[in-house]
Amino acid sequence: MGIVQRWLGGMVLGVAVLMLPALAAAAEVSLGGFIALFAIWDSTQINSNMSQPVARNNDPNNQHGRLKISAERTRMNFTIKGPEVWGARTTGFIEWDFDSGGSEYIMTGTPGGGWASPNKARVRVRAVMFRLNWPETELMLGNYFSLLSEDGPEAAKPGTSGIPGLLWFREPQIRLTQKFLGTVTAAVAIAGPLSGPDSITLPGDQAATNPYLGESSETPRVSGSLRYEQDLWGKAAYYGAPRGFSARVVAAWQRSRFRSFTGQGRIFDQNNYTAITVSQGNQQYLNPWVVDSSLFIPILTTRSANLANTMSLLTHWYVGQGMDLEKEGLPANTSYMKFDTSFGGTRVGDRELARQFGGFVQLQYYFTNQWFANVIWGMNRVYGVSRDQWLGTTTSADPAKMRQHYYATLWYRPIEALKFGLEYTYARTDYFQKVQAGSCRSDFGQNHRMLFVGNFFF
Image (tube, rainbow, N blue to C red; front, side, top):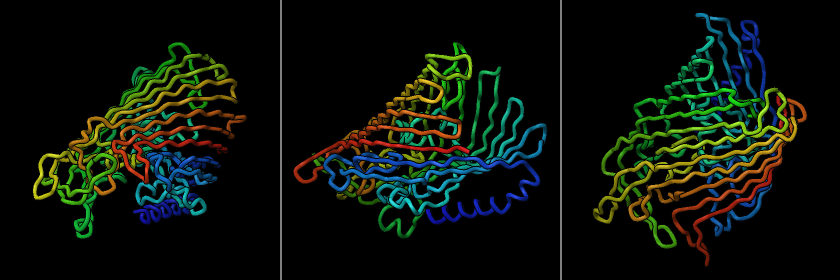
């Protein structure tokens, strides 16, 4: 899959470059993006986005510091303005970066993802879409951010921020957006169903003889959102621009099929897991869903473009089940088997979608138009899992019970094109199971991070 994605990314970029003169002759084409340099020191062997859980404190292979410096996160895009049609303005957008290895930890287990080989970054297409815009209506088609991926925090490396995958999730979709009364925006999207990097696969011999995913869907992923935004008592900054009060809610659903199988798994025990044979006798149809919401509240406000002495509160929370999203990377936190009966030494059960809630709170203050700071606390928690009935469907299933991230970031933006950040992050992962290593047992891990980033926007 990684080879195919890299080949397709290179092909799309190559075609885009070759077609640029022809596109420029037929439409207005502009180049944009940013160059970014990150320097990160971690106290453990966690990946760059902190999208993976922190290794337990008694894991000697992961409990030592690491420094990484990389410019992989450089990103570029083409915006193409086309002719009008049916009274609508037409635009296209292609975005790519050089970090296709960044998610490979989830796919292959390679520690640190793309940061394990910072001088071998590869092209990755992030967005390819076009849209038609009328005064109050927009029709968008292509691969672009999900309706769930709005109102993210302004951290240098926000990690999951309590919302695994939602903040970066892009999906192939057809989306219709409509504005009402100047303050209300409604949108609906029909997208390709999710079957992400932590999808359930058939184990053992079945995987060798039939490598298709054990999880699939015959329905599209359907999303809908509603947002209210208005200047009620003044504005505060959001990503460097004045913004009024905003309230948003969005929901998404799909129906997934999980194939039956028998294979090696594990159950909770006293200080370690115990290996067992598990079986899901019949295929099952389950319903992954999520409801997501956010509030942006100006506290100290402005009525002009001057952001000095403004303060805002951004809070963002979700609840759902089967959170099989882009950056989740935790198979046991998406679905598991619930013990029903024993047969011939095999634990037989039905598949359950893990239920989860989480979110973050961000407080941001602008000292001047150039200097500002924010603090963030984010968390997510799996709930409703019974230790007596949980069946792990692989020999490596190790569900995290709760993850927390704390951020403190100081930003300096002397001009629009330059932005520098210094950030401290504390991350903690609590697991359902204690694991013995040597004479120590542990069910949690902690990471401390210091980060510097420099951005040049163009």
